[in-house]
Image 1 (spheres, helix red, strand yellow):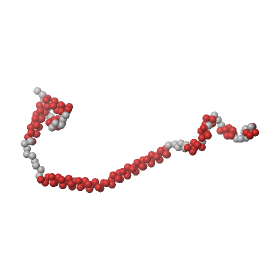
Image 2 (cartoon, rainbow, N blue to C red; image 1 turned 180 degrees about the vertical axis):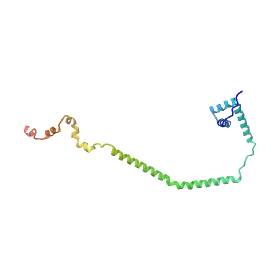
Image 3 (cartoon, rainbow, N blue to C red; image 1 turned 90 degrees about the vertical axis):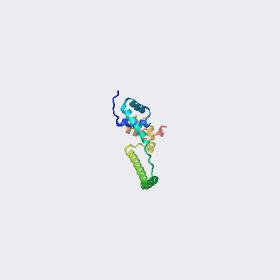
Image 4 (cartoon, helix red, strand yellow; image 1 turned 90 degrees about the horizontal axis):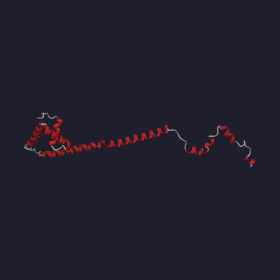
Amino acid sequence: MAERVPLNKKERAELVAYLDGELKGAAAQKVETQLTLNPEARAEAEALKRTWELLDFLPRAEPSTEFTQRTVSQIVSVRAMAKGAATVPARRPWLLGAGWAAAVLLAVTAGFTGTRLLTPTQPGEQELVRDLRIIENKRLYELVEDMDFLRQLDTPDLFGDEAAGS
């Protein structure tokens, strides 16, 4: 004979859900197995079924004629309070949006300024155009060891008058 083990709260809740038809699949199979193996669970299930059957014999309570009127009036007053409360913080979403916009603007400005200050400046188009001859002849200038010698070559008196040689 199987040992009688009382149900804990979780098992009792699963049993009630099973009897209500709320459990499906593996959970329902688990409760069915427990009902088969545990006589305490079977007794609990039977007691719950009998209790629910007895509920059908109790007289049904009828709401009073004032019940509907009181409920509707409470709903109307709650809606009025909610509508009144909703108009007060109407400025808050606008303020929240303005705050976010200011924060984004501040972040963009700080990022732009920080980037300008921290990144090294590279030559612009004007500098590159001004130094275009030097850039194009860089490979030739790399062969020169002494800048003074290069400057002396640039003087017209070094080789004489070009017109006389021609």
